[in-house]
Length: 194
Image 1: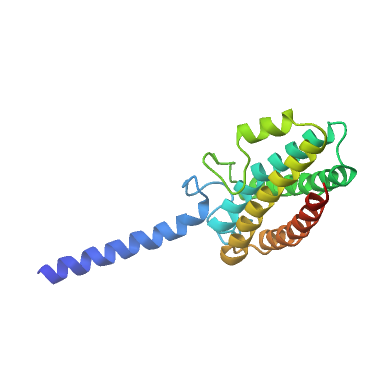
Image 2 (image 1 turned 180 degrees about the vertical axis):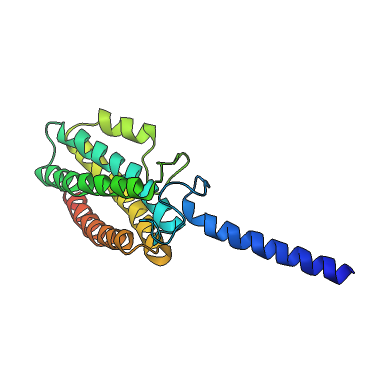
């Protein structure tokens, strides 16, 4: 009798875990049966939790990079190479934000709260220091902060490449790894000559 009860419990647990696994692709909000989710014909049929997490985390990450670029572009006395890099970052990441937001819309996934996210994000204190800096100090601080910021993005993108499922999201992650690795090298080269 004990074996039968244990077997029944095991089967029930297995069924629950299978159902939970199906619901696991609905995003970090854990809300199954959201629009666009759950059927093989839905636009999100080839999207897993890693794809959604990456997208939801990369949007505010990119938004902060654009904010940092705007700060440095609004200052006088900034090294021309730094200004060029800031413009390049804005030109790349602005459209990527729009693309990722369109994915979330297509997937029927609301933007979650990314509170507590680190991944190279600057603190309010860091952002204020950049805001207050000027000239060469601002150029140097921007580069130092953006290197850390880019390294965080590369880490997130690498996790997506390893764990993601959606080909478009993985392709974006690979593009981020390639472009931001190149930009880190450029920033390190500029820093060495400031």
